[in-house]
Image 1 (cartoon, rainbow, N blue to C red):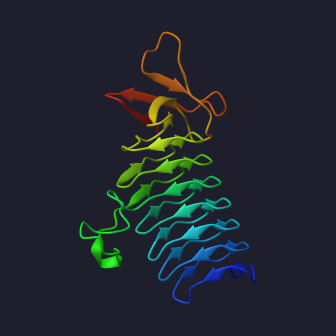
Image 2: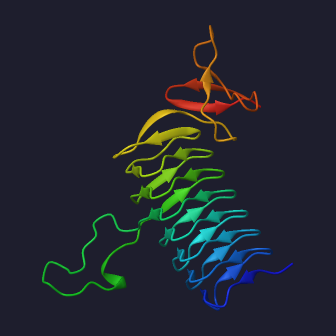
Length: 199
């Protein structure tokens, strides 16, 4: 099984696509980008030069992933979500000259294994979204998101916890700091603002 690229997509010859990866219409994958196995790149999505994407990642339509972003296995990037790369964006320098690639330092958004970014959410680099975290639709992430955190708003703030199934966890009655997934029954322990999945 090879990768599948629609005729209207642009995939640079130096990009690497894993087995079973699909690139849909009008998507663009730039130089030296690396995508793992069984990824889906939606219509009009953009993957910048040198971006690293793991296995089974879904980039929905018009998602924009700017270099040097790193996405772990199983990451979901919703429609029109944006991963930025310039902490101080300007078109021109202080003297009014058009800025070029060497005139600024790109900074990364890192999205860890299993995390999901909702539709039209924005991650303002540099920032890390933790394992299995869930960023709500329309949220603007300006600081690191802990593992399993559910964040929403502008700027995004933690409003709860989620498990691997993406379902909001419920705190167990009579057991403060113990959180349970209503779908899978998996248990998690909260301590010092972090959530750890039980083995």
